[in-house]
Image 1: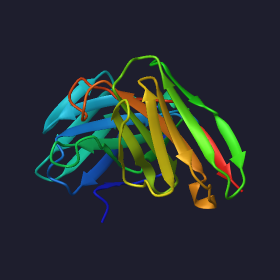
Image 2: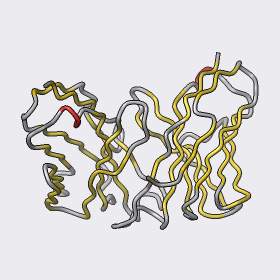
Image 3: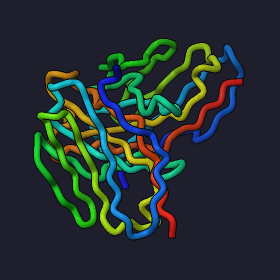
Amino acid sequence: QKEVEQDPGPLSVPEGAIVSLNCTYSNSAFQYFMWYRQYSRKGPELLMYTYSSGNKEDGRFTAQVDKSSKYISLFIRDSQPSDSATYLCAMWGSGAGSYQLTFGKGTKLSVIP
Amino acid sequence: DAGITQSPRHKVTETGTPVTLRCHQTENHRYMYWYRQDPGHGLRLIHYSYGVKDTDKGEVSDGYSVSRSKTEDFLLTLESATSSQTSVYFCAISESPGWQLNTEAFFGQGTRLTVV
């Protein structure tokens, strides 16, 4: 079993829909949780990060962490065609390998106008 | 945008030939990383560096070597390229160790390598 599981999709939604992207993980040492967005043929860019459990909101994006369930989510409200990209979850913890982020495989999202 | 330049951006090479990919940064960040990205596998760490001449292996280091003689340059070498090393390679940099709050990793644009 991989340490981080993420449904690769693809996920196709109409413009304006609420999108829910999820990852599960098995390593309880993970403390920092991140979401990266990657446009086609580009490098990943950090979208949001959270520490430990709880919610964090940034505009149309909300990141949610449930450490008890080892489950993280990214919600996108009022989705736009410009949100079409691959979304990668990533996580790290001091007891899980000092310099290594562990990535999910990414979920490809298409927002249809 | 963070100052990271990967070169070349695209390369086609033959099996058995050595290949070197270069990552150049202008941010003076201490930590540099090489990842490969493949369908079905996501991003996997190959090697990383925590300072000049200080490097260590990542998850998929077999068949790869790295060197860092200057803060700004991190080289990835495929000693004898194989078809299984066909991939997109990303360099990343970060200012601090680990991935602490407020420490962002910046990724380059990637190098598309095809081994035929």
